[in-house]
Length: 295
Image 1: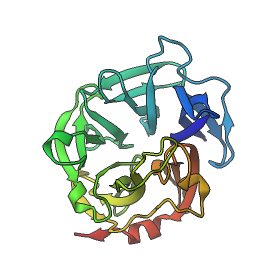
Image 2 (image 1 turned 90 degrees about the horizontal axis):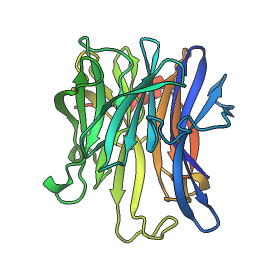
Image 3 (image 1 turned 135 degrees about the vertical axis):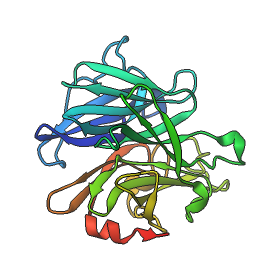
Image 4 (image 1 turned 45 degrees about the horizontal axis):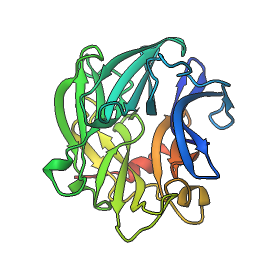
């Protein structure tokens, strides 16, 4: 019913998408469950959806997981995900065939929005993440952090990357979006940012007060905890002339979950819109880099 917040990558000669699928009664605007769907494409635009979700049995290791992010590393497909059991937890799983999955790690509560870099850095796996440190500051005020691991199971060396206070167009929180891609100038990474207005009465429930936008930042190739440059304005904003962004389960939401840099320099940006559908935007990598300002 609601297909959004997909992870997309290129793997073994084709595009692979794993998407969040929330289902229920659309007439009553009621969601009763969710699973992870799988789709393939030859061009990244036209997709063929598999008939069954990947977590199609009660004992599946990914059962109950959502908001997938995909990264190819050493020809293996890694999946970052969120899990809502006993608090919101971020996790990492890996597969070699899209049928058998091994969960390598589940964080303690509360952490999510994890994205894995497509290369080992300093011999380690590295991910961006967004812990929930809400009790430390008024409001949400969540920031982007980085951690590393020797094997995908044990994570540490946490470092602060970019704070909500540094982002001029949010009053609520920021976090990672799609997994970063390598450029000669640094790791190009999409972010999400949230601004909140209590006067808003959006979404199915009529109480949604947040707007989600997307930004971009450039991270140092050798030490991605260092921000080389970042956009001082959002690069994607939900707009009323695009109904799929402005109206849905949660109005005015853009959440980037996949970014693919093509050989010609064109970038495909896949994003969830209004927590209802999956959308695709195009940009040239040079234009995205030009939006990133040092300092």
